[in-house]
Image (tube, each protein chain N blue to C red):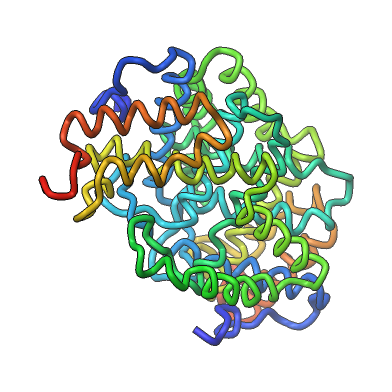
Length: 214
Length: 214
């Protein structure tokens, strides 16, 4: 994937260089629609892609911001979720319950960030990279809330699928709770609701109580 | 489609009524991922869905806001594009070059707006409905820029597809220019670029010069 999508059909002459770079980036990010996640859709029998997922998080921010334990800037939080998965265009999706893939995830995603944001004019590349770093570091209330949405949304989809990725071999309800606990770093109320869904899922057998009863 | 998705698997007891309504709405909007548009993706051989499209517009707002002829609030503009197509969950996508479908589009979408936003608690339903009305009326700089993104994004995809929906039977390059001219209500620079792509597409035969040479 060394070529850009736009290389297959370059824009005509007569576009200013800055706008040309921005439009090339905006065409290239179309690839996010082809990066499949593990989560099943609630509305159809197929897996979700990263672009759909990112849209869903962005809408959730506006609806659920009132549950943030610290005040958040909604517009800023939305910017974080809109671009948080762009690195997966080159680094791929790393399943939440895949320890091996997680090992070199940071290095792969760092390189991917340079590559995708580097298509933009330098000032915008720097701004987007800073937003992505902010999301990853989770040191601002906005980044913590964005991460909470990133964990709550698949939890809703897994509930609707009566288990979904909770049924990944070897995964227990305790591990699901541990992976989802970051929701509580942003919102006590949303984590209480999320835990309620996991607890009830465990009770119904959609998530395993122990690693050995699978 | 009288039932909600969540009716197939209701949330457990113990969730507060307001949050329960918000989560039911957030599950229901998963359906936007199943509403297909006419536009072909640039990154894969399939049509785009409304959720992917909405994400793409939201990202475009941040990258292209500098070209707005009037100052815009980026966060507010992003809110408009994130929800602008939710009515299509019930009203369906109305192809840009389909005059018959456009005839009752407004009435179908009004009813759909009541239905989808009405799932939210009243204060949020009212706010979302107001944002959708603002988008549709195009009387604010933010709404005009949001509409410009909504017309520019498929123009980029059609360019990448060497024609795409420009090749719809009976459609001419002049009709494409007429439908896309609203981009110029928000941004002189982006409309100049969009027109450049259409003009060059016409020159290459990707859009017909007259209705009779098809």
